[in-house]
Image (cartoon, rainbow over all chains, first blue to last red; front, side, top):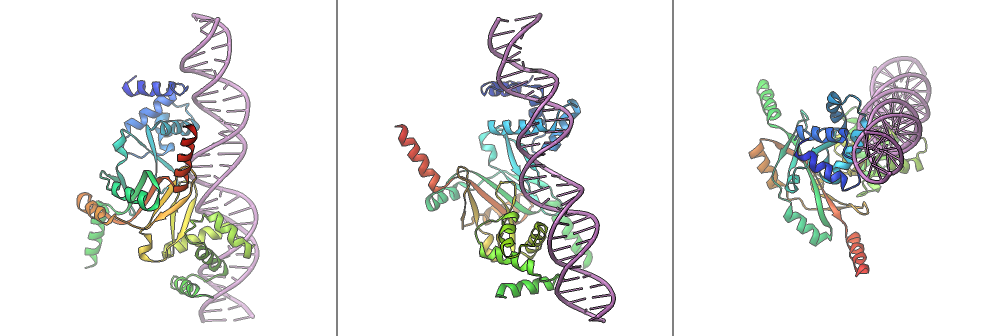
Length: 155
Length: 155
DNA sequence: ATTTTAAATGAAAATAGTTTTAATGTAATG
DNA sequence: CATTACATTAAAACTATTTTCATTTAAAAT
């Protein structure tokens, strides 16, 4: 039982929830697969290796709890399924996703220049921003190169 | 047959596709419901009033064509269904959505300050951005006010 | 330790959104 | 006006997720 298990157990207890082997296995899977944007089914497949009797429903139910606790964040990568990433600290959500439209790879950028824009939105629209989601679509390094090479062949 | 029907017909013909009553009705519905972010089913319900025999599958198929033509844009408002908005012109996609987490209303902001960020991404990540999606979550004007009022009652 | 009990689980059914299939209809071409 | 190729409808299939319900289990009470 590691350090974050203990935090998780306390967090569960404080909500009148139980610390079960399944919940522990799911959180550990998230921690062992950081920056991977796992879908519930991918998490299911990983957890099943060591806990073959677990059901998908438990994955979905646990992810809701983890999200509610702020330990995990649900994102949308336009592939029709939910995707989850570990929410390590408060500043952590200040990163955006770069989605390659050719190969589908997802990478991340760390900076966040939206504070000024959010202030402007509060002033001009009277809308108080508490969170945001930013996705960039385009071509990743590798695909840019393969496009360049393809063009040269035509020369 | 209005002006945009003619544009649509030409655009379809140039792709070897046919200009049918159903496709026309769907595009017209999108034009008559601008800034509404309709879901396929909502479009279906509207189109059905005048074309009761239309099927849902045609809505989905036509939206794919319209999206491919750039006449329409698919967005995600985190409600589990696809949402579509009319893509009037090229600069039109330079707006973002404000999603109220209390009442679920969706409004829009026009400005777009992402160009500088996209240049930075190209330089630092070698990722060429061709499009982006930005969503702001928070509280709309009305909900901010009702929160304020609720607080006063407790005083 | 053992009992109790409320919460959690797994399997399966249900649901929601979307896509595919297959038969039929229809526009355009020769 | 016959042909052919695309489009349509309705229904079935599919995918992701949620709910149901009988059973199990963590942890509080004994």
